[in-house]
Image 1 (tube, rainbow, N blue to C red):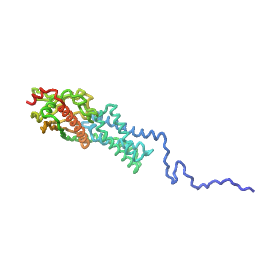
Image 2 (cartoon, rainbow, N blue to C red):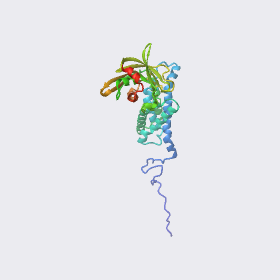
Image 3 (cartoon, rainbow, N blue to C red):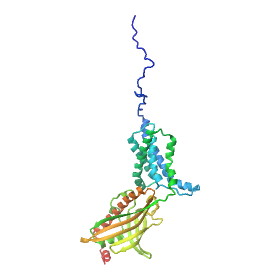
Image 4 (spheres, rainbow, N blue to C red):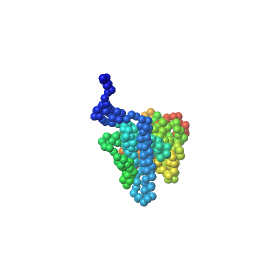
Length: 371
């Protein structure tokens, strides 16, 4: 009788070979990438950016809305720790949480939130919530803190199975911080900048250029970072004698104008003034409200020019400028203001040096100034 060569079925108790759903050790195997995963690489940051824009709107409208409903305490605004610190941290956390099912690497947890940050900052400019000056000032802080939030969420996901209630509680933290931070007094930090340049011209020549700086052309100002991000350039600065004393009338681009009341003057040696700003000194749209000079968060004090004669008909020209920064995040705001202020002062020194060293177009006026 012929032998049956048909293989017998495997016993029911035999272990099945690994499939796509399981690995050899029984653990779930990594799922193959799909087009949806690629889209989620952008969807997750987009959700973080939308959240950041909503909190930006809330930081501006939350206080007035509460006051209209009888809330009498002060509510912190955009220049607060609740917005500038907590918002980017939570943006990073939400960006990584949105990819919890697909998972992400530690590298993405660190730099993925940057996509959300750039989208949020760009959206703030497109919707006119912020101008270029504020966006540039906020960008380094937001990028660093969003990375911190992303890494923190990645760490928490490796330790616990986070539920929706936890994420919801985290999302409202910036708005709650605005309420708590509001009654706290903002710190006023008075700072000073002193820069010096040597001018190949006598003090009388330099003095004349300081008192009569008219017709400043854009090409006379060096290319500086502060003007690149949108701060108007000076157009003229003229000293006039009025009934109430000597003043310096300053005009900048885009209709900016203000006074400097002279507080000290030693002919061809020293002159100082303290700024005075009118309600229309900065027309709407010329500078962001959060960095407008003479406003709640930033102000200029006294500016002093010092001229020291040197050998060979040269002059050491120094500018000493005092300014105030007022915010809940002065640890970050003060060095940023110092960076921008030094950039502006260096541009002024370069302007006066260039003008004083060129052939004098006003010999008669200069001769009178030297008498």
